[in-house]
Structures are given as structure tokens and as C-alpha cells.
Length: 182
Image (cartoon, rainbow, N blue to C red; front, top):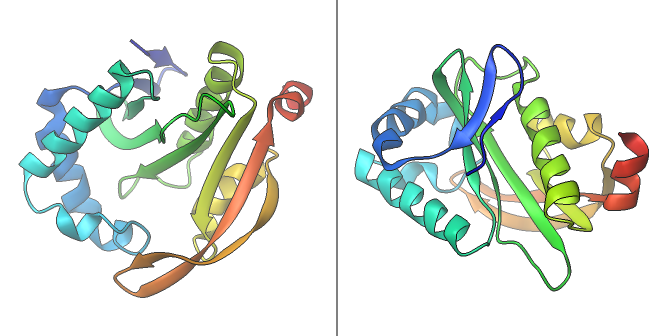
């Protein structure tokens, strides 16, 4: 199982079924901010919804389709980072992430993404990592930009959120580029 200590504050570790309650509470505390960018937030109305998410994430991991980890900051669950379904034929994967209220702007997610990219490129031997963000979500976009990803284009009206459709900025990183940046 994936478990990575980044520093004395930040640890990435797999989700477990007993974390459904704390994960639900994190969504509750951050709901207003998260719903602006994540279409699933309004559908999470009880801890059982997070239990279902965790079960799905664990199943994906057991089927070698990628994995999801919790970000633990000073032993508090602070957010989620995960691989979307791995495309083994094309050796590529997307990364998705979110942080709870009060944890953003401190570099935690950039550090977590760096670990996930290293893992994808070096351990899983993938060739490409992609990150998609709503074009107006400047905090989320700053992460791939800070890590040296290439902005490959804009997908118009890519996702429907409560406020309407948003465009996605598509960022890509190839293994040879990541090796040069390391």
C-alpha cells in the first residue's frame, strides 16, 4: 500500500473505510468552496456517500487502475489526491485533487502532486501525466504550472457545475520532461 511521509507535517496514505466520517466532515466544512469547482459535492449529503467513494477508490486500487490517498497534515485529514483510471495501453494517467478549507495556499498539494508524479513516472513507468482544472480555478491551475507542466489547450464547456459549464485547462507532463526537471 502507498504510504509516503513528505515531511514532519504532511503524510500521504491510502484511504480506509473508517475515514468516511472524517472525510464527510471535511467536505461539510469546505462545502461552499468545494462546490464552486467539484460537481459531486452537492451529492454528498451523508457519511455513507464518502464510504461509497472510499470503497470505489479501494476497488480501483486493487484492480491496478490507480489509487487515491488522503493528505494528512499534522495527523488531520486535509484533502484527497488520486489517479484517475490508468490508461495502461497508452501509459498515461490523470491526477485529481482537492484540499479542505484552511489548508490551501501552503504548498501541501504541490508537494503531494510531486510525489504522485514521481510515482507515476518512476514506479508505474507511465509516459504521461495530465491535470485538468477549470480555467478560472487559479489556485488549482497554479499547481501544474509551478511543477513545469505544459498547458496543452482549453476544452470548452468541459464540465457542468452548479454555476453552469466551465472550461478546462489541460496540462500535460511527459516522462522525459519530468526527468529533466527533477
